[in-house]
Length: 125
Image (cartoon, rainbow, N blue to C red; front, side):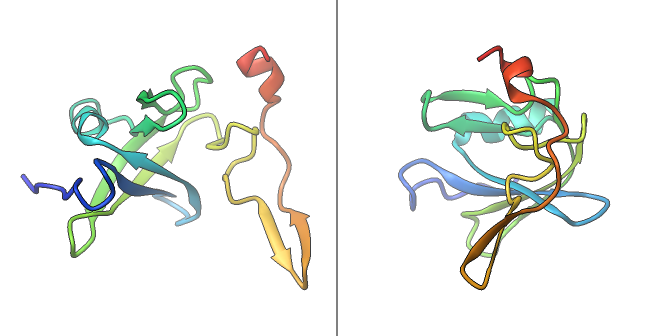
């Protein structure tokens, strides 16, 4: 098995998450060794939550899990690309399909797409 280089970024590697069918970039997160191993074992995209300093299994609260279909590692072994099946249709905690829903054009921000779910209802905030 490949050994990722977690040393360059203080124990983390960036993980780009992409829809395995459409190629749409859904989100960017970070993995530590625990999240990497959990992803490999479970088949569910798992990350390191920097705000909680804990393992974060994507979709554990919302039900919008990411089933890993393919994993790629870059040439320096310090970045990961996860190609996933996005269950529930939304990757972003704001309810949008992708975390990259803000389009910058001519100095103006345009919101692309509508939320798939209401985060206040899902996260009970």
